[in-house]
Length: 156
Length: 150
Picture 1 (cartoon, rainbow over the protein chains, first blue to last red):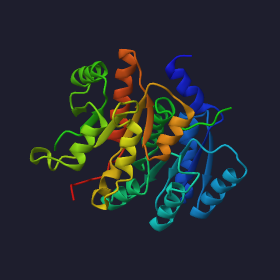
Picture 2 (cartoon, rainbow over the protein chains, first blue to last red):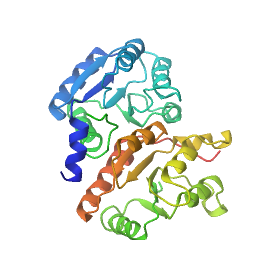
Picture 3 (cartoon, each protein chain N blue to C red):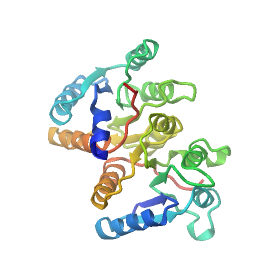
């Protein structure tokens, strides 16, 4: 297998993407856009910090397969909720620490951006405003995070 | 507005030269600096001389297999700096580049705080495509931390 195909094999095999998003409208758009751009993955959407933690904790305790990628909205509805999720995933003792977490937020506040990196967020992206921009966004996520980056994987 | 600065840390002169060529020809809008080892990078970030006192990179590409101070050790020193005065350095996006894709290594690097992990392509075109993809996502789509030396 060529290098690129090996990357794709591991990244796409049985993959799930976890979306943590409290807005119903945004969730719908995200589901559609991912279906168009990254149809191979299973999309799981939760709408609160608590749901996110329960979902992830359940996987860890049952020794299941973690999502390949987490897209996290900061304001759930308050940014403290977002920080809580990020902190719980990324703290030193956490078995979830290995997960790449990409912030997907409407906030352009430099303080929010710095804080996200400080807490261990992998990347910070601004929510697109119209559907074609959402498509562009998920095409770039596919291109870079699914087809180029080596995501952490479990041996089969 | 200054060009975004990318720091490339790799002990291979040949590979660094290849990367330099690609940026020069295909990605000239970026300001790329090369460091032959982790210790040079750490010195630049922790002990800046006057002429680069205010400069911080927007992105670091860090080779994993290096003598003296390994990529992994360098990563840990950047992402968990012992001195809290340098805490802001952990916000700089750091991408690990490796010749292998060893499960444990990949997981260890993400756990140590790597923002992403890439396999180093050998083919010129693959490397060109990789660097274009890296620059596009990390410096156009992604919002980096707005850091100033503190």
